[in-house]
Image 1 (cartoon, rainbow, N blue to C red):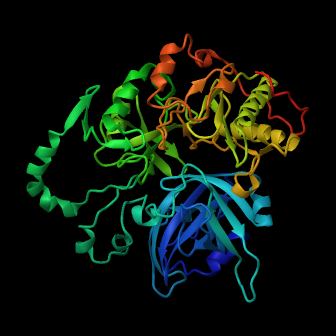
Image 2 (image 1 turned 180 degrees about the vertical axis):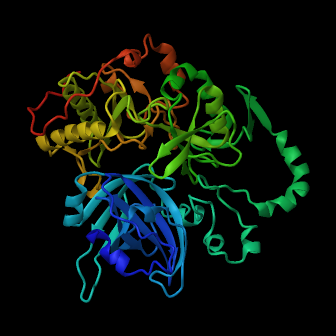
Image 3 (image 1 turned 90 degrees about the vertical axis):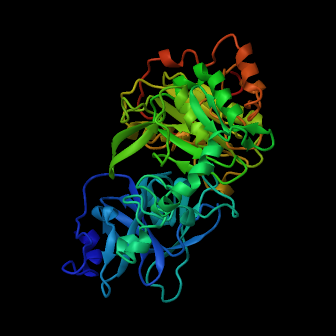
Length: 530
């Protein structure tokens, strides 16, 4: 009750439809961002912790540009039920104005969140409808006459970050993830004008709206002409097949689709029947890209929709079952396919763990290889076999298959403990913090991908990076001989044709379960030999 005393004291629940709520005993990990058009437009950023929503008012909203600081003023805790609130607070009431559920999902702290809040530095990963990846909240020094603590919300430098000249996520995806409405529509303002605005469905931003209905006839002849500029790959129609997706390689949409068809037997076992997080770059890898986790208007039926339960209720996820689904994703401009660590058959129990080794500035490739072998030896100490793949970037993924028995909390605890043990034993080589300034000369062991809605790039998926690199499974024996992003759409087929054995051939047949979490300050392991 005391946790929400300030929240309740500020509101008259006979006049506002905001939930009165109560502190909960559940231990959840939801987050929500509410777009709030009060005396001035701002975004309310809320993280579930200890049965309430810890809350900050972000004056300019979140930015996807790493290092760009957004002021976040700490405000009173809110009840968990507030995370579903969308409507209008009456004028004259506290916070009077229109509230939209702009984004929601789950969050995972890198370390103890209570310590982070107390020390004024909280690092975490978001897995939402719009926001993803690593973020930081850093408390500023107290200023004279300051009533509420001020923090800075900063995006971490990762695959979900954007450049300063990329589209602003706030303008690119302005609508509600709950109802697809705009602020005007929620407030009931100008209903006739609102009805012709471009509207996003609840789970994905659509670029078609009712305003286009009147022009359907006039565009029909143009559409017919454009239809002739298409081809079929694996029975799926590809429009604009000659569109270049990687300018440096000159690779086209049709070539990417044919590449995937050619490696289908290698790709599909790691992709089928798993929830997908997609990176879509409709105009190519050098242009604007965005994350997509839910269905969108015009999505092919070859890509399957799967309804699952999540903390906000029911969510519709994406999955593929065959190569036609992959080609359909290519048609929609998908350049990266990321998968969950669990299958649709059992989302609550992971069947793969991921250790993402991300080298900081100044770390040589042989050191990354040595780190992967060190993770392998640690896992072997607990009776666990592991496999390795390139990421298509600078790092490596160490992957451990599991019988799906342990829950996500257990998986996260185990991987966190192992990563922290390595960092404690060799702090000059390893770190578990994602703060870029603290990673120079060290390797960031990212264990946060071992969370229910987190994902990692799928084996044999391309990356939206120069050179058209491909995340590629390799054997432990050949690891030292490969280059970090040496396998590409252009040369991967030659590699696969030369292989006498799939480096991950034994992965599906391994039956192993998660042991107790490892302890820090274990005896050092030798990592020089395979």
